[in-house]
Image 1 (cartoon, rainbow, N blue to C red):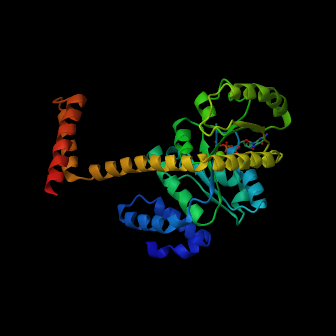
Image 2: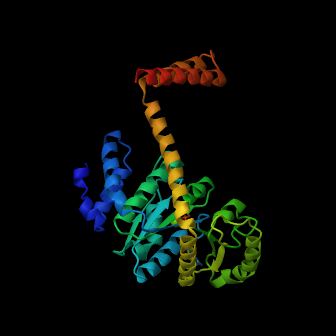
Image 3: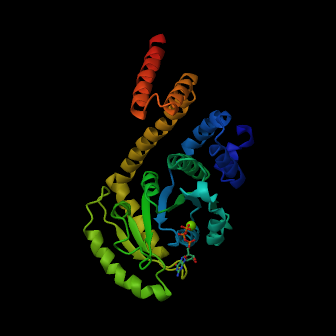
Length: 332
Ligand SMILES: Nc1nc2c(ncn2[C@@H]2O[C@H](COP(=O)(O)OP(=O)(O)OP(=O)(O)O)[C@@H](O)[C@H]2O)c(=O)[nH]1
Ligand SMILES: [Mg+2]
């Protein structure tokens, strides 16, 4: 299948080649596995030079609209923008492709932008793993700012935090999303908090919330970057606040690069990636072993017949695995 993917064209930024490469990456077929590795190996020397930014917030806070405007602003500054949506609910809803395309109408039509809806995968870990690889491919294709939209529903932000250099949280006062409603843990992860929909009827509330949130930010513990969380008002509807947003990002990057934090964070993220990826591999390889499948089948039927309980079954599995693996290593 790799024969179909022209790496040379991908590296030149060809969108068809990139689309095809991403489709391969998202494939669940084990026959495609060797080609996936080959593709990623070929892309790898050309990755790492982009800025990776998460845009998170509650459903309907305006993430897609914001990305559309920010993306257009960045293209105006000479950047090429890749957008990736991570939607942990996509398995159920079948993805939010239509929604994203209409909310990002300007960006999705622009030749300097590339928008990819979230991959469908059975686990959030799976989504995150594929998303990292998709990010690398976009980087190899020359997209130098990557915007990752993720719905703020808990575990997904934590995963995404491990994938990006910069984390933006969009909030909308008065939508249950006021100070009490924002989870402290998420606030602590944010490099920038944006009070979004800062326009029209929302304005009085935005103006009232701003100093409250500012004060709350002072109470948060010192961040590992050593930098404090910025707070801005933005309206995507009125296309306001995007220069300030980008200035905040640039100031962060400059400071984090000179302190060494930027590089350190990426190293930590690579370690996390290794841990997570190896778990996924262990699981897949072990589950596929006929001995283990047989043992699991036996334990299941014992359980159904009330001959065991989960504790005993797991203990028995533990001994079984130990023996299996010890036996395997003695043969070498
Ligand atoms: N007043 C106002 N409305 C906005 C603004 N940005 C987006 N909206 C509206 O908010 C609604 C949700 O916008 P989306 O961009 O789809 O929000 P989202 O956070 O991506 O939503 P999900 O992907 O479904 O979580 C739409 O009706 C938008 O028109 C803004 O700056 N001001
Ligand atoms: Mg959206």
